[in-house]
Structures are given as C-alpha cells and as structure tokens.
Length: 332
Ligand SMILES: Nc1nc2c(ncn2[C@@H]2O[C@H](COP(=O)(O)OP(=O)(O)OP(=O)(O)O)[C@@H](O)[C@H]2O)c(=O)[nH]1
Ligand SMILES: [Mg+2]
Image (tube, rainbow, N blue to C red; front, side, top):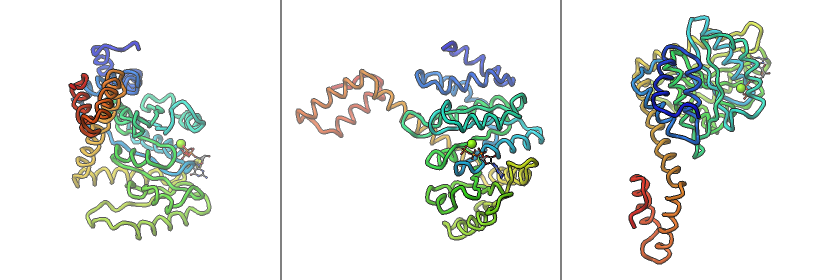
C-alpha cells in the first residue's frame, strides 16, 4: 500500500475536491481495503466536514431488465443537463468476476472519455455479509469530488437491493417484460423500497401487462399514508437507438428529490442511512476484534471457566464484550 499516512489521505482529499479523478479513484480503493480497515476510517474522517450535496439514485431490479442500459441512458440525459455523474456498479460477489460487468463496461464506453462521468465497480458484501460500508463511503467520495448525481446500480434481486435502497435518496426499481413479475418482487421486499417504478423495454410486447400488474400490486399492497409520496410508474425504452422515456424519468427523479426535501423525508432518510452505517461499522469492528488471535485465546480461557461451572456463557460473553470494547484481554 503506497498511501498509508494520514497526510497522504489529506492531500488525496484536497485533490479530489478539486476534481482530480485519479484522487477520487484512489480514495475509493482505500475505502475498500479489507486488510487495513484503518484506511477506510481515515478516508471517512477526512471527508466528515464536507457538504452533502449529491443526489444518490439507486437503480435496482430483476437481472437483465436493463438496469445498466438504463443507467447509461440516464448518464447521457444527466450530462445533457450539465450534471457530473458518478456510477457505482455494485456486484453481490466481487467486482472482478462475472460477465455482467464486462458487458456494462462496453455499454458505458460511450462515457469513458468524458471527464464528467466516473464509473466504478465494487463488491457489495462486507465482512459480515451485509452491505459493505465501502459502498456508502465511495458515494461520499464522489460527492466530495463534485459529482452532482451518484448512480448506484445493483445486480440481481435480493437482500442487497433492499440494502442499496437504504443508502439512496431515490430508489428506481426496473421491471421489463419477461424478467420476473411484480408478485415476485413483492415477495423479495422490492415493492416497498421503490420510489419510482420503471417498466423498461417498453418497445417490446408485454410491457403493458407489466405496467398493469404493477399498478395492481400497488393498489392491493400495504396502504401508505395519504401524505406519502405517490409512486409513479414510467415506461422507458433505454436500449433503443433513440431511447424513450428517459427525460420523463429524470423529471420524476427531480420531482422526488424536491418532494423529499420539502417533506423532511430527505433528512430523516439520510439520518437512518447514517445510523445503518454506524451499526455496520460497530458490528464489523467487533467481529474483527473477536477474530484477532489474542481475543480468540481469551475466548478459550473463558470457555474453560464456563466448562468448570464458574459462570455461564452469557456472563462469559459480557466479559468478552467488555474486553473487546477496551481493546485488550478479558479481565478474568
Ligand atoms: N428491446 C429492448 N432491449 C433492451 C432495453 N434495455 C435493455 N435491453 C437489452 O436487455 C439486455 C439486458 O440489459 P442490461 O442493461 O444488461 O440489463 P441489466 O438489468 O443491467 O442486467 P444485469 O446487470 O445482468 O442484471 C441487453 O441485451 C440490452 O440490450 C430496451 O429498452 N428495449
Ligand atoms: Mg447490469
């Protein structure tokens, strides 16, 4: 690791603030470094005073529904509005496996030489299987680096999509004919997280049926307060030579953003997101300390005392937690 002094991180952050793309990329790599979590901490600390100004958009939905194509079309549309856009393609397994990312890279190639676009693939899983704390930290790096919009695209349908929604200001859920129906999405908890529904591949037969099923699922779904955001359904044909519906989608995202700010929901969603991040950091830190050799040895000692009927497992756990918090061995 070349950068390992706090001073280096400080200068990277200064460079990122001035829009040096390489500095932002480097900071994201540091945020991701599993072998030295202290680096992510220093990146986070160095960004703590920066203003939160970017709009974070989560793009999720069934595999093959056209999320990447839609992200590419959104980037084009947002660039035409003069906005700088960061894209994080979050893969449930690893950023370096699977053909999906290669395909995405080809699709995003049109933006490869554009300084106003930053594209990066990241692993979504953290140490404990939940959403990696590196993902929201990377979004913050892009925010500090002056990207107006951060698009976070997830691959597949499942828990990671639900978690991605917790870090987005606006969550767009993408459906398409022949790619899993609304009922399936409801089962996976996807319906609840959507702020905007997209029926992509509107150029294909069956798009009307998908939109109708969605409308129905929304009607029979959990009742929402009258003051809640009315979740729109928009049709797009992102993959066509002249994509359709993208301007409508961008307008709806802006409207959602304005509604979030005016209703106070933006602030409370961000607070929930930060609380989630703190929770993940606490749990991952505890897991790491517990896995360290010294603590492991200490657990063996505690176990033998439980075996000797001195105290029970819960008391032993209290002692272990106390020692983890103090960072040393348990006081036996
Ligand atoms: N006809 C039509 N095809 C589309 C449209 N949008 C995307 N496609 C095609 O659908 C296929 C899948 O698109 P992707 O953008 O890779 O979908 P994805 O949701 O990102 O897929 P994963 O990342 O693998 O889950 C590609 O062959 C696209 O060209 C569209 O609006 N109309
Ligand atoms: Mg994709």
